Length: 281
Length: 286
Image 1 (tube, each protein chain N blue to C red):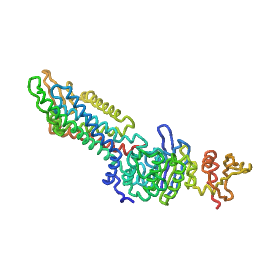
Image 2: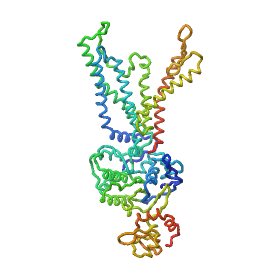
Image 3: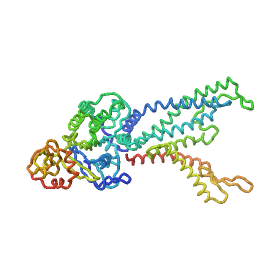
Image 4: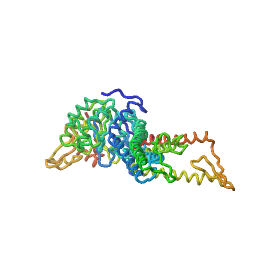
């Protein structure tokens, strides 16, 4: 669905990508993780056609994003972290803006808006940041765009809204759609994303499905010093040591993506080695 | 679901119509306020003229002066903002992500800045000018104002922009000033895509630099190619010299060649700016 090959991009004197390659398949919700300034937003904007590769290629469902053809813009929706809504009535905006998306479904919008407690009317410039963000998320889902690029979507949402966000997004997922979520708030999306892509210094340093992660790694709290010694990554907590261990016994556990992220950042080679081995199942 | 998708990726009338609706809805307050605001400015200016002049303050020459200068300033200021959202990351992404082609976006911008901007200014001008000329005429009639030679000052007609600049035959034939306005306006529209900030000032400086460079080119390069004593007269097609008895000799293209060629050159410049704006929109990154 999205193919990136040998992407090079730099802001004036600051290189961001130096040969990044990545494939994004339909039917997945990707969590794009990385430190500040590692190029997450740049990657989303490059896929969306707002930044152009200086070298390499990006293909999205057969379209070249840099051409920004109307058919492409109808199928790829970018929700930036810092977004703009014009100062007009909500219903008017909805009516006019939705007319530009041939696959927009009013029913889907209503359903998502109901699940998200989005105001039904009023002026857009009088809504709070969180309300405007929720409105735009509902709109994005209702456009039936095949590729949804969400940059820090849970920033500015309250605790209840974050839960609603997970529910609404999970409900909108289907086999023809690919959702990429760039975030720092890994905990907000832990039960939502089914593939984790970590990016650092313009390179993909980790890219695995949640299924594969649970197959190869086990996340556990332990008091056993020997086990702690064997861990790929450990963190002290008041309940004991939170560990990431190689999953040698096929044990089921719930992945802690924040810990996994730290593990990859500190011991990337060791973690990736476990994933390069053939499956034992 | 909405209607079927338009298959033409370059231009679709229905898509363009929707884009216009979106632009109008987001900017209508500004546009609707523009008419009374411009009319009020012209009203103030013409009142000032009426109070300051003892003779004939609102003759057709001053009306034309007010119209053209007003149109130039307002039109260029507005044009320098027409694609200004591209200088802002938030608004730029929102604008570029609207599912319409770069051509449709250009046409939408040109419709508002070039065509509707011109119409709105003209309406605002006449809203102020017609009553002011009437007031001026009644004041003059009451005060029996006369020219210094003793001739009475007659009532002023309302100047009609489509008749061109009073006393200028060439402008009355081909509307040179209006064409020059559309050239400048096109340059400012391009400037609004090209410059991220202070587009008006930067475009103004760039236009002035180009004009100065053009004059310098004529003086320093073209004149050096001519025989000794010959000069180039603006824009470029007339060569002029004075012989020993100070008689002026001119070489120029015949009017039936020079006229249409000059007009073609003038009319050809705005589309050049529009095409450049189109490619700039296409290649714009935010």
